[in-house]
Image (cartoon, rainbow, N blue to C red; front, side, top):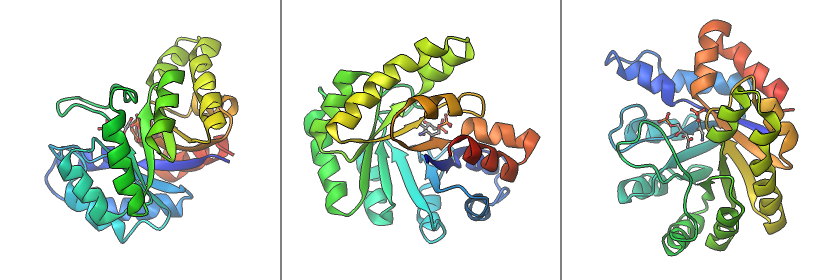
Length: 238
Ligand SMILES: CC(=O)[C@@H](O)[C@H](O)COP(=O)(O)O
Ligand SMILES: NCC(=O)COP(=O)(O)O
C-alpha cells in the first residue's frame, strides 16, 4: 500500500482569495483525514501566498496522521519546522518567485548544505525527505546526505503520460527507484499526480511509500466531491 498525503495548499489559496476563513483549513484537514487520507502535506512559501506560517502551527494539534511540511530550507523555514516538529520534512529547492516547485536538488553540488540541514532535523526526531529529479546520480547523492527518504519529482512523468508515452514516462523513475531501494532510501513521490496517472505510477515503482497530491486532487473534487476523490485515490494506491 502507498500512503496518500493530501496537500492542502490549494484550499489555503482559495481561503486567502477572499480574506476570510472559508474554506476553514483546520476543518478541511480533519475531514480529509476522516475520509481516509493517511497524511496532510503543506508547503508554506516565503510570501505565504497560500499556507501561512501560522497555519503550520495550528495544524500541528489537528493532524493525527502523518504531517508533512515541504519547503526550501531557508532559516525561517528551518525554525518553523523545528518548532512544529512534523512527522516529516521534505526539502525542496524552489526559488522564492517560482509559481510552483520546478526542479529537484542537485544533491552533489549541495551535499554539504544538505548533510547539515538533514542532521539538524533528524536530531530533532523529524523524518527527512529530499525532492529529486528521476536521475540515478542525484539519488546516489541523496543517499550521501543521510536523508531517510527521497521524493521523486513527478512533473515530467505526468507530462509524458498525458501525451500517451507511458513507457517513456515511467522509465527514469523506475531506474531512480531501483537505485533508491538498493541504497536503502525510502521513496515518496509528488507533483502533478492525478486520478488518471497515479495507479500506473504506483504499479511501476517498487516500494513507493507515499504520494503527496494537491493541485489535481482539489480540481477533481470540484466535480466529484472531496470525500469521493480521496477514496478514489485510496483505491488506486492499494
Ligand atoms: C514539492 C511539490 O511538488 C509540491 O509541494 C508543489 O510544489 C506544491 O506547491 P504549490 O501548491 O505552491 O504549487
Ligand atoms: N509534493 C507534491 C505535493 O505536495 C503536491 O503537488 P501537486 O499535486 O500540487 O502538484
